[in-house]
Length: 425
Ligand code: 9W1
Image 1 (cartoon, rainbow, N blue to C red):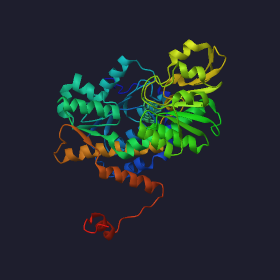
Image 2 (image 1 turned 90 degrees about the vertical axis):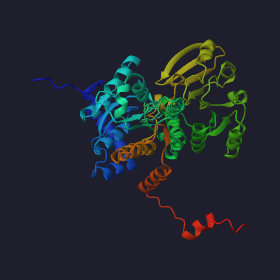
Image 3 (image 1 turned 60 degrees about the vertical axis):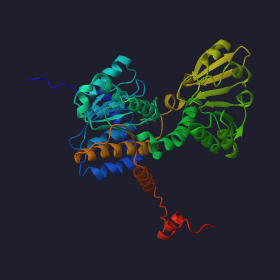
Image 4 (image 1 turned 45 degrees about the vertical axis):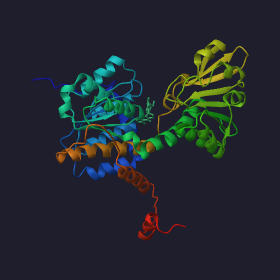
C-alpha cells in the first residue's frame, strides 16, 4: 500500500496542544472574524476553492486560516517571515489538516521551498503579506496563472510593489489591496503599534512609565499611537520630527516638540518610529543621561546606530532578556532593547488580537468577494484594486456591535440637508 504523503512541515507536532490554547485565546478576542465564520459556515461560499497563503504564522493568523477552512476552502500556508512563526501554532494547524510549511528560524532557501510546497495543490486564490507568493507564481510558476482567480495583499510594502508591477504591465492576475482599508492600516499602525510597543518595552524592562521623559522620534501613525499611549500612562512625551505639519499636530495634541540634539539630553526612554536610518547616533549617545533606555519600533533596524554605540562602549552585557546594558567610556549606561529591532515584535507579541480581528476580517471578505465573482463567471480586471469602502464600514460596524456600542443614523431630512446646496448660509 502506498504510504500517505505528509502534506506539512513544522518544527514539532507535539507542540500542538500548546498552540491550540493560544488559538483558542485569540478566538475569544476576535469576535468579528468569528461572527463571519459562524455566518458563512452554513452556506460554505468557499467550497471548491483552494487558497494558498503566505502570512506570519501566529495565533491570529490561525483564526483566519481556520475561518477560511470552516467556510469550505482547502488551505495551504507558509510563513512570510523566517522569524515570525510560532511553532506551537504551526503544529496545531498541521494537526487540523492545514498543509502548512513553517517553522521558526528557517533559512532563505527553506523559505522559498515552503512557498513552493503551498503551490503543489494548484491554488485558485492567493493571500499574501509582502507579495512573495504572487512573485513566486509570476516568476517561477507561470503555468499556475490560468487557474488563479485573484489574490489579496496585506501590507503597504506589498501593495507598493504590486502597483509598480501592474504599471509595468507585468501583473497577470487581479489583486485586492487589503492594506488600504481604513479598518486595517489606521488601526494596525496607531492602536496596534501604540500598545504593542509599550508592551515590548515593559516586558523587557518593567520600568515605571509615569513621570518619565519619553522621547518618540517620528509622529507618523505609529509614533502618534505610541505617544498617545505613553501620555496615558503618565509619561512626559517629547516628539522629534522633520515634517512641519506633523510637528504642529504633535504640539497641539499636547506633546513637547524639540530637536533630537536637545531631547537626547533629557530623555529617559527613546523610541524611534521614523522609517529612516541614523535617528540616534554618537552625538546623541554621548549626552544621554545615565540609565537611558533606547528602543526601535520602525520597520528597519538601522534607526538606532548601534555601530556608533559599539565604538563608544567600554563594556556590554545582556542584563535581562531583550535588554543589553552598554557602559560607555564616560561611565554612563545606556540600555538597548531587542538589539534595535522592532521591540513590539521581539519583546512582545505583535499587534493585539483585537486589532488583527479587523485586518483579517478584511482579508476574509476580500477572498470571499473574489470567489463570489468567480461563481458568477466573472473576474476582476487584472490590476490592484481597493477594498470596497462599504466593506470597510461594514467591518467597523460589526466591530462596534461586538463591543456593544450603538451609533446613530442620519434621518432622511439630515441626508437631504447635507446634499442641499440652495440654502447657503
Ligand atoms: N501578523 N499576526 C512576531 C509581524 C514580523 C510577528 C512580524 C501579526 C499578527 C506587524 C504583523 C514574536 C506576531 C508577528 C507575533 C510575533 C509583522 C513583521 C502582527 C505586526 C506585522 C516583519 N511584521 N503584525 N499578530 N512578526 O502582529 O499576523 O511575535
